[in-house]
Length: 549
Image 1 (cartoon, rainbow, N blue to C red):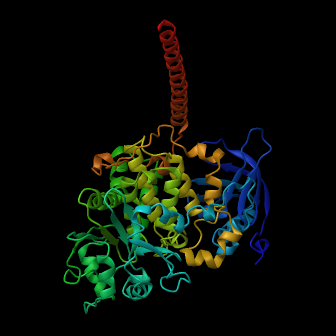
Image 2: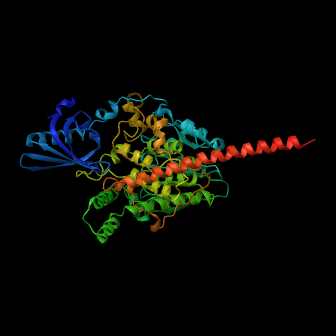
Image 3: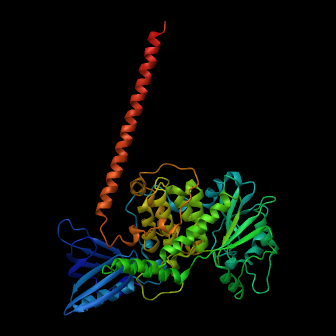
């Protein structure tokens, strides 16, 4: 298919653009295969380059011969284009609709994008499982890297290499895979160096109504326990939902078959409930007419902060089991690709200082989201404005980033990255020139040949010129476990995401710049103090030498 077939009117003059925080500007609108571009001849006017894949929905209005297109973006921006001529307006609108809903992944911009920067590091090879496993040197005696899934035949949503107990061979793993939802047998998510306890993750066991069991599964899970120790299974579904799953062939671990494990049920919502929550939240944030009571009631009705609280509470419980009770844990919900990953990732941010660095956090995203099979292509297909909702769209990753922001806000000096880093990840998960978030799992990315045909997001982010934008000036390495508060008073609306297009951040940006300047000046003064101290010590030493006989 040629993009030209979808573009009925490639160019329109005298289009007026209205967008947040900029004065209205008149210019020429151009449509390309992947971008909507508006350029103006006015001095000091910034061009608009908008990826079609960032467009969530469009509305059309007509007043006489003038047509208006309102573009609602996946990053929650709303842009208005006033287009002279009804026919041109209708043509532009239908072209945008067609170009923003392309079915084929290989027609998306990452396959056409050619970087204008020098590639210093190939991000596709920055966080390989082998490299991550080497970091667990103290665990190598008990764990191994298995390539049982190298052809994606055992589990289509797992990567080719996974970390499993050394005592369990590949034949046993194949049997366990038939007993777990989607073939997602228990694998290592995190090794706590302090005491050797671990977090494992999987899909639900397929016990069904007959109480089916799998000896190999029991052996695998028990292989993670120390002698005389108990473990915890954290099921991210409420008990009644887990019980209902048995009727569909799913279920949960029976106490009789897993006597050394205590099962805890938590309630983390999924799918359309989260999507509806996001829609309500964005709608209330965009309503500029409401009074205080109405705003607060709409914010509460969205339940967004309640979902944040549920996820953080479960992550804190997981971290507590490992660090304070010295117990290993297995985490799963139904598939093990959504709420499970939220909990395993956040528990690591609480426990592991490396996960709070830029590269460590990138490794976490790669390991616990991309390689672990979170279906980004499905979950991030639409955002808060699209009318044609599919059942698999859900802001799972955005909720995770929001939880990270909540912890970052409570521990502003413990993270090497800043809020802009989290916002950038949100934007690229929904629309990007990079191939990192394309596809639903490693198997799909392999078939699409993303490593050969697209650029990795990490290749761009990890360049020194970009890293400086995402580095937290307050960062001081903190090797301790950090325990976030999940009290309702401690959780706040993430203004940097949900209100950034509704009110200017000019003064906050100026305050941030001033803070950075003060920190830099403080470092200069500290360096001078250290230099003067050294000079003083040298002078005292010289005086001592001269005075000695």
